Image (tube, rainbow, N blue to C red; front, side, top):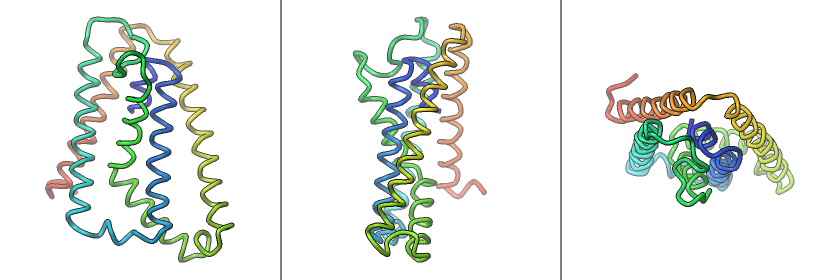
Length: 188
């Protein structure tokens, strides 16, 4: 959602930078899993801190996006990024990936399973092949998705752009609230 929001506001580069930040975050969790640090996330306060950070980040991005969607100015070069800098987009992608409990759970469970199955971690070549394949696939996805957002931006009217930005922001808020409910034991 953040890739679409940023990409619609600023085009290909902000969309790509959100994606690249997310890849770095995923690679970080992949490294943690492959190093065998999965039990760290079983510590209650670590899991809670990551969940609270995820909720805060999703709510912040959702509210910021809604604010940007209803500001009476045309879609600028870098929605949410001061002075055209794409660092904000990269940091958003990185923070989303690092604070996403689903990504953490995925990498820590999959990483452990890959090591146990001998797919990764047995030899440096196996681990390197796995990480290299993952990286190649995700970088291809980053480029394809950023290009799709860029081309989609050309098809949108300013009003449609605002509503799509608001919808993406609403989705971020929904996911933040759903995560908060789960954290508080109110969800399924």
